Length: 519
Image 1: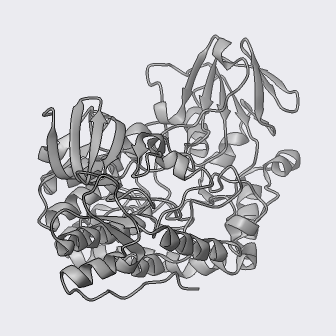
Image 2 (image 1 turned 60 degrees about the vertical axis):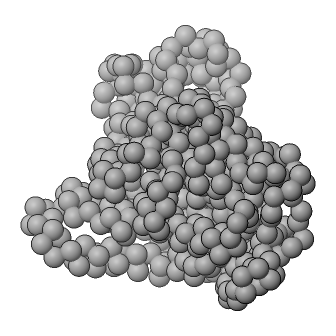
């Protein structure tokens, strides 16, 4: 990498968000960009998570780009290796490799108000860019709890997202800490191999059957011969999930029927009433993500599995002590304890116009205009930003909506002409987030009686989108210039000049329609 390379756009991350941004940039005719990736290959979370049993809980044909349909998915719910291969496929089909910079972890990004650019320090050198698109994703940095005595544990310790494939679990006494989406896949995958498995369950999840099956050769041949059938399949999967949204966002009481189905699913596999009671959640289904598995409950019913209904609180040598005092001797600990979602580490590395980091700006909780733009951080956008997560559908739908917004953002910069940047107005950011949080109040994620990773340290839901994917696409269809200030080169970049007025004065452009969060 050149010492002072300058590009129009830097994309950070090469998972779905980063690769999608790269494809969209090329389709917009923009080739002056690079994709910075800290690892040695593309894939993001689907590269990092390679634990036994790793698979997606969204159907394959919906968990793929609309502009890159794939007729050859082998299963209804594809495994990690197939999704990672799909991302490599997208990289090659859209000729993205010349833009990739591997082993280039971002150390710091600093806004230069005089030159209207981002100065970026990476592990492989320095560069600058007019615009930064951060696509690091919320599931990229593993979160391991600070357990007293863990450092002195004599056995093997690793997180599900950093699986040690060199460690042989056969015959070992293994503790799995956590009961999230990763843990419920790991437990049944390793249970037949280990000597004894102890699951530390702080909160039981709601688990529904997973309608997985192999996709037949005939189906795949049909999708190859008639591409519209792939689109139709995707559309059907999308439509079903759109119809489900109101139960999560407006009428949580309607989820009672789903709750009964989940209890029936548990009763079918767990015959022991005492164990069944320990595995039954005390919160409304949907408050935490509903998990899908046909093998989790049967694995827990096996004689070599113990369920400790308490969190891990201390490690004494090779003895694990639960909060309820239960002691367990183990040879290895696997943490399935999630990621830094509401406190993304990348935020500590982004320094905005006022000299504050994004983490400092977000001290009271993450906020971004339409999930993309943070006030005080000109020409910086995030993919899968605050309140863009989903509880029941495919994040690819949200990513593609944000790519629409990114594309129009760059068009608006072209309209402004010369050296210019757009900075989200603080009032617009507050108004957007106020409306989002007002809608959030009646959702199952806020009213269901649970504590989830959707909530930040203050209990505010800064993660999930409280509406349909259609609503979000409408809200991000184009950039509303009234929500931004225009920034021109100066020693102290000034706020207070609405972008819409600047464009009107300089280019005679009309102000675009304002998109609101619909109630």
